[in-house]
Image (tube, rainbow, N blue to C red):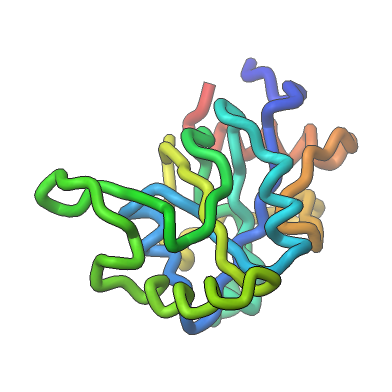
Length: 167
């Protein structure tokens, strides 16, 4: 049986919108958000933490909601304009220099209070938003990042470990 009660199992709420793409998060290995509260929430993540990414119903657009990815934090939160990834050729580049939807968020770097920040993730498994895993009673939270200890979180993790094939 997996050890879902470990403190390194963190909840992350996906922040979407027209200038963010879950497919890009999956492809380039990151999650991101903007604003002071989000940035301070993202600082709760430590290298090596396992994150479970929850996508709210309004982000999916087709009535689904649920958990869409699980991965390990490999780089702490940095301003999006500094966040580097490997392109298709294996070259290290700033994410905002690639032809991505998220690159449009770089303009917010001019206003530090609004600046987009990214956290690097090595995905263990992700699914398309239309395949999100959700059951009635699952743990959800309005915070962007949390380290819950509630019984509801523990039972959610037990189900997610099985659904995503994570030991």
